[in-house]
Length: 458
Image (cartoon, rainbow, N blue to C red):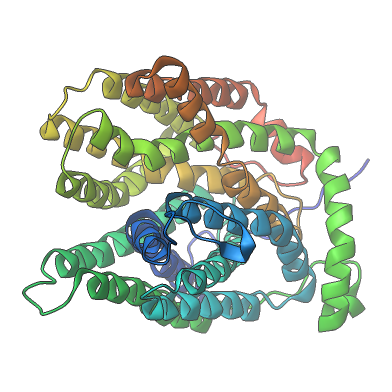
């Protein structure tokens, strides 16, 4: 009879060293989330578009790398390039991290380079749209690579029954950190005139502050986390950095073959791909829906984004506690029902009703953080021992590399119906189909098939 390998379990009552290391792990969620909120979600897209418009020719076009495009399309293309690079780089990053035993150094390198590029966005002014694009592409690539390495620590820091709570706490701290800096940045942006700053100067300071925050709190993370000996058959390659890198490329092919052998893990990734794409699309198009269909002011839209961040902190903690009682999968399935309810309510929102929009933001915040945190925890149970970073590389790809599906359906529905209400409602497809796939997955069997011990509650 084949004996399945079992992951080492941290002690039930976490000792002082483990508590310190968990705090270091939480601090990176706190550190990195500001890049998503202040940079990608709020400030960079409109600012870089304005810089591109300033550089446009007499026909209102710009010519990056000799290609003529309208300035309004520039950031979308830049974001697409950065995502494409992540699809190519993240699995290799995960393989190298698992084989080298140098996760701490890799996390530090990617995070510090990404934060420096974010800080350097301060110098994007005048007509330097190409500088801004290059800095963002590198920063976003480093953000994804560091995230893969960071996620891979979770199985080392929590046993099967602790993982939901630990993941939820980290995600909650991330939303709180993102909300605090975004609140400070919004205060600076709205009051820039009284401070003697131009609007552009205020935006550049906000972007730079995200880089300082990201890099500064990463110091706490890399100080408290520690490397583990790589669980690999090729010990010599694991001890040699060059061997680890070349072996990482070889291991990528082996991981792809291994993924095909773990069909239930792939099943979970497929379900996650669908409903997470729905989550990301709702967040991405909510401002457009609020502005174009509900005719809400920019102040209302931005303050609603901040409200989501604050509530998501509480929501992630609350759903983590609920998961401890009814199990993570049931909690995620319940949250997907709430997401469907959000879309139904959005369809019937009255134009100009800011209070209704804020209420919807609260509802989104309650399920947003918990859905993502518990999925991270569930996936960590489905990874074969010693391949945590490799598998999380593919997890990040399913998170980022397919993020065009939801926006495409939203745009296509609007094109066919000329109704933003129908377009937002069309996203129900992702939550229903993804939820059905997750409900039909025998999660306990999938965990055992990966060679892990299932938690008591699923």
